[in-house]
Amino acid sequence: MVGDRLILGWAGMDWAYEQTPPGTVFSINARTGEREWTFQALSDEVREQSGTANVWTHMSADEELGLVYLPVSSPSPNFWGGNRTEEVPLATSTTALDIETGEVVWSRQWVHHDIWDYDINAAPTLMDITVDGEEIPALIQATKMGFCLSLTVKPAKTCGRLRSVRYRKGMVILKVRFMPLPSLSQPSRHHCLISQKNLRFGR
Image 1 (tube, helix red, strand yellow):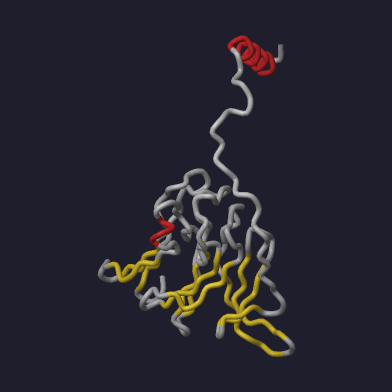
Image 2 (tube, helix red, strand yellow):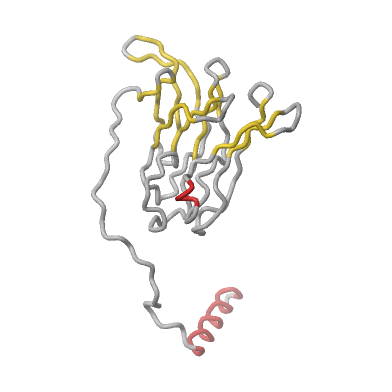
């Protein structure tokens, strides 16, 4: 809840499926029930072959600045990105939206072309920190990588040294259209079943 607004994300199944619903965030007027705005991290082009990039965990908000902070997840599927070769700059990010309009004010992507399920799994923490003897309002983002990343909230920039490094692309992984090993024969399946039963019952 932010004032009279109920801001909702949702959880989806992005780990195994290429095409899943896009990760829409809704702002609902808590008094009237009307939808005021929607936000999606995926562009129209990417939504044709991918999905999610949703907000499935808690969000944070700063009513004084008029911002809601979204911990955005990775696009689908989690562990293969050949279906989304375009840039998806709002995925696996901390993204600040205008509470009134739902427009993006700023965004910081933590993992480029995420194929490791490193989606942001915690609400950003708003707090004052001391940098070079000066107390500044900051946003701390915990991540699945085990890092706590800090940003100043106005303007949004990293506290201290944080470099974004892009690595050279390797060979595009093609879809496997053959079975690399032959299927088990019927006698082999029978042997496996007998072995499992023996282990289960201690024979």
